[in-house]
Length: 494
Figure 1: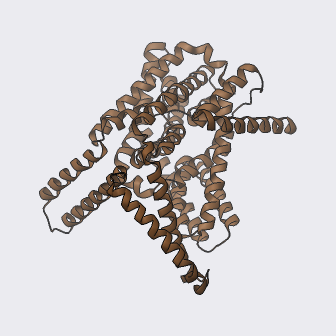
Figure 2 (figure 1 turned 120 degrees about the vertical axis):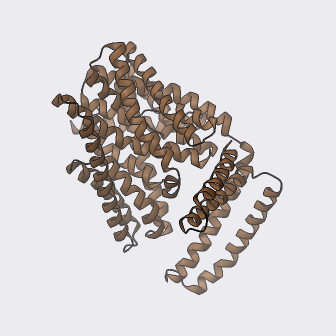
Figure 3 (figure 1 turned 90 degrees about the horizontal axis):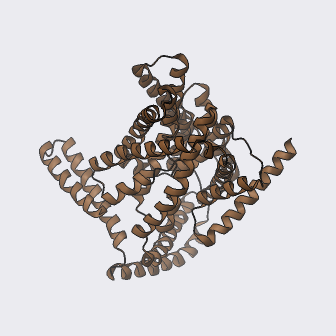
């Protein structure tokens, strides 16, 4: 049995590697290509169905995916955009659960309790394909933050709401107040567990300078946070995200050497590549038959999910003053992926599983492909590739000088040797800086200029708030200035 499973695992990795090679030439998003390959393999009978159990997905596959995503998120960007992210994440889960649940109940006659459980299943979004497209074209950082931040938060919220809805169905009692209280406790408890483990790991990492040991600690943190939170009946997803944010924004910058950071980034990239490869191929393999038996129910579910998404994104994005283009991208970019599949498998109902698989396939294939074409047409600017390469080299050289000077202070490199290296770095920085200045004067850095202006506006906002807090200006004056600065921010994003 073990040998058979090992052979199947190797076959899946071989298929994933082949797909990765092919997409380099056809420019298809990797996750979408994996699902298509899985569907083809399943229909052709080249691979047997390999069941994805709830425990396998939740306790083996999910922690590294969540941890890596959280570790690479900028905490400052997340904090600066916490309003729209939290609104879309939590409202998205609640409204999707309600809209999808009542739609299935009205149009298909599915019992309301069961329909609401399905709504919770499909409320979690998966940004993997969207963010891969964004990285290939250098889409605005804030747009990527909104999509990734929403996904990370609503993954945890969706799982908690699903568990609460399932418990209420089993007990036969609907108590909204108690459900809301449970939701707060489970999420807060998960965050507390994750922050505690993340901070403890951060302190331990500061005492160690061994890349292999440090990476091993991050693996322990990813899985320990999830298991420990679940053991106390808190949200394991929220715990992993909280721990990942701590290590990614404090542990990596203040407790790890540059060598460790590079090795860790490569290690977790490989892990995520393998996990995504296995999951998305198995989604294709396991759903090639079930979706055809429930196409009417799947169609209704898809329409309900899209309607719920629109009901969340457009009001929230309008309230926070984002441009129309961003609204359309975030609306259509609410793809479904691993979480709905895992929740459907954990519930075990054949019809709901088929519907969840159908929604995920529609989302990844039709929405994913069409969104890639739309986004590349609207955001791509091949003329800025040279500028981006120049910026990358300039930042790398500046960072190398900073790390070299810090290494002298820490006694990791002897000062005479470092001083011998500094002139070459200074020369490289000066040369790259001169080229950047030339390109800026020629007007080839419009996006870079917008980002700098946005930074300046944010600094003005912060200073205005501080002045109001210290009593130097009145609230009315502060609000007037803030409205003016918000208007300028909106103009920059158009």
